[in-house]
Image (cartoon, rainbow, N blue to C red; front, side, top):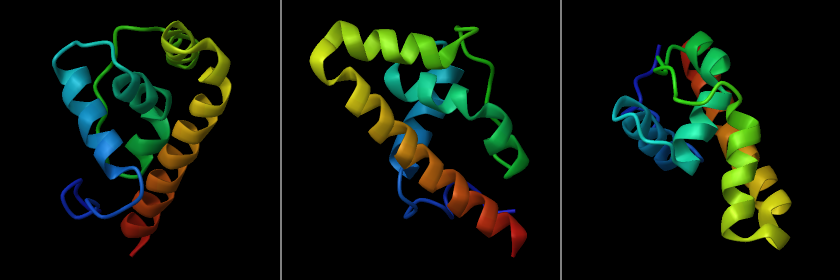
Length: 97
């Protein structure tokens, strides 16, 4: 199992680290909601994700992005999910070693 520090160079690692800090502090942020969306997948990869304030993090993340800039919310949402997916793949690969 790789630690978050060992995965620091993985794509999206900075988002995951920020999201974990935000969740631990009880803050609802883009990074925190993003990490909440992948709670189960990251958990299987050995990264413990605290429960977040939202029961539907993907919906709340989209709403938060749309509040900021409605015209680009969809593209930004997809880009964030792609970065998170890249990180999760790296974490899963590290765990399999």
